[in-house]
Image (cartoon, rainbow, N blue to C red; front, side, top):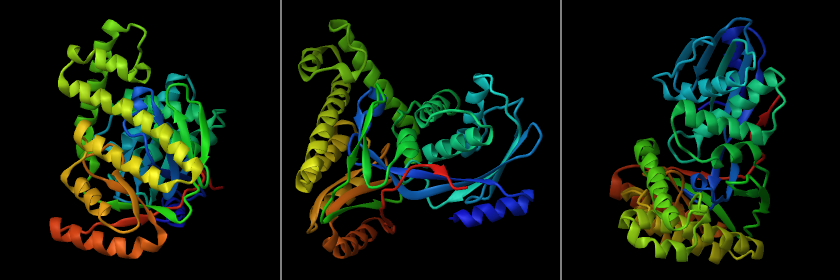
Length: 384
């Protein structure tokens, strides 16, 4: 893990000039999981876990990337951008390829990056890579793109170059986050509004299962296709439907016999999760943390049983959390199959909560469960 000062110094030691510095944010998602690629609603917030970039032009056609946290490098020519065996490099190369598709003339770049945003924990380090680099490149070459346009560019990069059929939530949250506020985002229209995070006596706390969600890449793609399969079945009876966003519960029930039971359960989860999100925003507006927590617990139940993207470790953490005093709600967060659980609990219960969770988790899995205390901050930005 590196600080901003570390990354700046590493760059100057390697390339002998002061760099442009970018601070890219990770994110949490309070509720609205696996709804973004179904044109639904999400409720993310940018957090104080960062990837720091140091970027400079080098006057050539070559790019040199250095991933400081893992000590890896990648070198290539802008004339020959090809997918790398190093997964992290593809998130950066894809941004450059998308800009080239717009006939934007680029020059070679030297890049050093690293930070304190855990990989594989469900806080979207990949989107932070895309967001921070996209903002840095556009600043470096004076490209006039809005943050919304950068999020869309990063999404296209994920789809077309990296090969991940994700939704836009992560990139959008990283780029447009605002201090002490969540973003209620309509993933179809990209209309958004900021929702104050007035949690009162409660706070949000992440507990890391230590299971890397990177193992879920193929299963993630399966869920995307399963939802698309459900939409195709529903379109037979309701041709105006474009995505699960358009489907009512009555329509889904009417088409239940036209799809496999598994497909029905996937679709029903998405419809229920969109409904839960709207209820969660109402609860937050009213300062009702008990209702918000109950909705989070129902989301986890749906992710575990209907959508089947949880795992034994995250299920264990949620079930254990439910037994603890002061806990309003908990759920797995992110793509699934590992990563963190998001816990909404009273501030005065945190110490005992963590003591019990860490002890019991180690006894069950012989693995330490790290925790992350969160601050919701402004999104990805230029530091200098």
